[in-house]
Length: 204
Image (cartoon, rainbow, N blue to C red; front, top):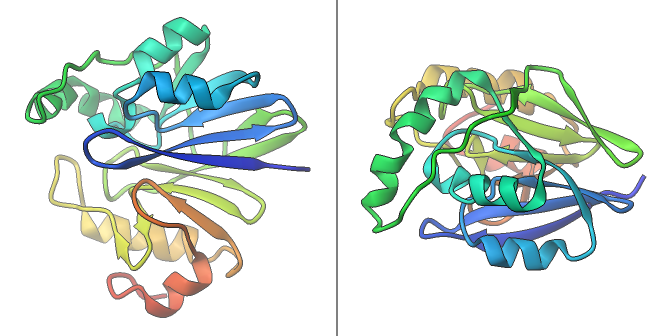
């Protein structure tokens, strides 16, 4: 099964938006901004779902317009619903207008998201935010702002908790195969094996 990943760096905080496709179907992960760029990258793919790894404004800023123009559902974890209520306040600090997205439904720990002839599993990883999730397919992980190359997500924002983050990474991510490629919410890709060896914030 062929999973293809296209990375778009969008918005004022250089958020990684991912177009993830299998066969002719695609899902959009963390469309933080730049609607037209995202639509252009989609091309002839049939988008079936928009997924946010968490509810911070820089990961959901383009959701509402994409929902309307593509006619697809938007999903996230229910524990980040409250973050959407304050996202506009954060966006305005960057001079941005923000439309609050409305989840069509919620995803839970272990849920399988169908894409073409494969499925992607949701992993609830609280810490950066209460409803942070990672998305796993085989040796491919979309980690949102839970895990970065050589770093981890901030825990000084609303709902952040370092003990939870540490537990999420050690118990749910570091148990994955070392060869697993990590596509984070910001910055370059990495691997689980590299982070287990060199990440200074969370040790196995």
